[in-house]
Amino acid sequence: MGNLNQINGTAEDSVMTKEIFKKTFWRTFPLQACFCYERMQNVGFAYQMIPALKKLYPDKKDASQALKRHLAIFNTTPCVVSFITGAAIAMEEKFKKARENGEECDEESINAVKTALMGPLAGIGDSFFWGTLRIIAAGIGASLAAQGTILGPLVFFLLYNIPHLLVRYQGLKLGYKSGVSFLENMAQGGVIALLTDVAKILGLVVVGSMCASMVALSTPLVITIDGASVVLQDVFDSILPNILPLGLTFAIYKLLQKGIKTTTVLWGIILLGILGSVIGIF
Image (tube, rainbow, N blue to C red; front, side, top):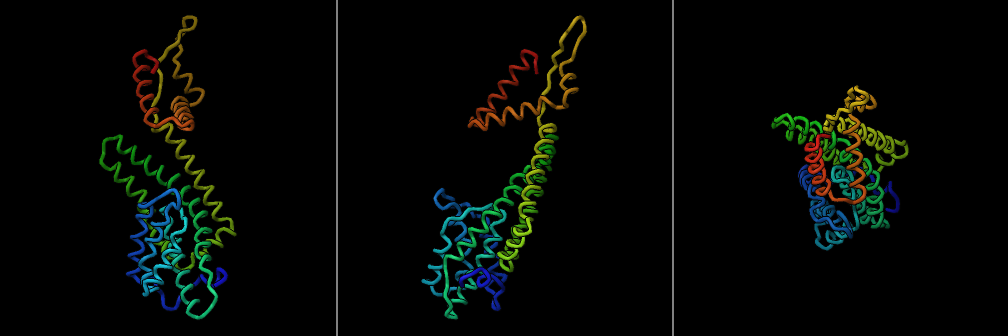
């Protein structure tokens, strides 16, 4: 089992029965329940592997050794972890067959492939789920909630979790059947890089539109010049519509970048709003 081809493929007697599939699928959710900064999500990943390893290795000593392999450092986006889990189960299956046939086996090849998979998938998962889908769903849900309807949180929950659950469910299937080769083909064809860039661009577009639709800031100031009254807000709108909400958003972003706590920024916004209202500039 010295190369990828030997540990990838479809076994004749598949370990991935419906029962094992269901148990493994539900165990992907508490991936970060035992998160630590030394080995990240390793305990959560090992927990996912237990049902398949118990079936593959009836002997407790063999199962224990196999489980220890999956306590190596691991970290990826939780939404796409099932893809790697499926691939790891397929590799364990091939590993056992190779050892039973007296072939030379390299245990570290399993963790090497896991490490190779977790980086690219984390890039896609973070860009799409954290940076794009979550923001879009939150924006739509917040807009509905601002109108006083209970549909706000429900829409957010459904818009985010329906795609997330589909990817998590199908990822386990795809990872078990052709995880390693599928990702290799995507990487070689540049599909992963393209998907990541598209997700980033879409996320930025959504964030930009939310600055105008979700952030409300205007000024009632009127300046008199040579007897002529100039509405300051009209001047701002003629330069760039919603320039004040955009400026406030950038100001908050810079404050957060400098490490100022979100609660401090929030109290600052409240005090600024009260003071601006009292003196008549907001």
